[in-house]
Amino acid sequence: EAKKAGRGEQLIFNDAMNAATKDGLVIDGALRGAIEANEFYLVYQAITNSHTGKLTKVEALLRWNSSLLGPVSPDRFIPVAEDSGMIIPLGTWVLDQACRQMAHWKQSVLDDVTISINVSAWQLAAPDFVALVSQALIRNGLSPHQLELELTERVLIEDAANVQAVLAQLRALGVGISLDDFGTGYSSLSYLTQFHLNTLKIDRAFVMDIEHSERSNNLVHAIIAMGHSLGLQLVAEGVETAGQAAILEKMGCHYLQGYHISRPISPDELLRFADDRAGRAPAPYSDYAI
Ligand code: C2E
Ligand code: MG
Ligand code: MG
Ligand code: MG
Image (cartoon, rainbow, N blue to C red; front, side, top):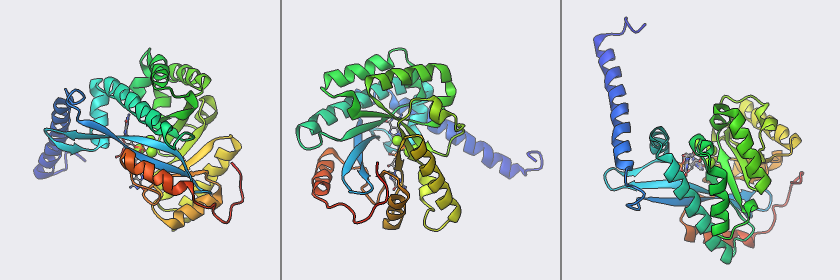
């Protein structure tokens, strides 16, 4: 088919490829020195109990305001940082920063909240990862059950044996392990029991259509039922409407995350959000227990 493509199309294709490569190189260059230049910061997104509305977990999300490129989204710079190895120091920075923020929050009201951090395959594969995590906890006076690491299905596939051992050590410490973007990857269901997970995050792609597509609705229902039977906590990602929240609560999804609950916000804004939710009365109806 490629041969049949006209000269014009071929050129456009090549230009697009060049643009993508160039984009990566430009980002790669701009990433160098960005930690030292304080160009990164974290924003925090609330994860609430679907029944009571109370704040339960907070996901830390990385932001980069490049002096050269302006704001760059993590979907663009994380893959580049993974390719260059920069994700190792960057991931360590995120871990430390998030733990410090959590330690600060603990002194105010958020002492029964868990902080969730996204972790790349490369970080898990580093020989000192478990030590790094436990040092960050100790340094900041946090207990391990206050930290949860979010992994994608890709992480589980890449170096299965080693990953399994690392996750076992982390779980033994008391750190939570959450499987992010569940349903979009390539993993087999056997991963759910093989690895030491305690939370499944149902990907936004399924939650999005839950009100209007019977297929998505059935799929989410099945994921939740499976999660319950495996004793996993369930978080729905990308909850954008009250209708979705109501359906998910009724299906027995324990926790909700998405713009309907809150956008990713600053630490101060998150404190206000938590205050707001602390006094909230339980929802009138629920037919499940966590
Ligand atoms: P993720 O971990 O699945 O995070 C959820 C993403 O969905 C975030 O995008 C969040 O802002 C967005 N989101 C949350 N609620 C809604 C909603 O209701 N609707 C829509 N449309 N989007 C919603 P963000 O912050 O751009 O991050 C994208 C991805 O980049 C993350 O996906 C995660 O895989 C990665 N990432 C972010 N921070 C880090 C980090 O510190 N380390 C690593 N390794 N990856 C990170
Ligand atoms: Mg995540
Ligand atoms: Mg996700
Ligand atoms: Mg994602």
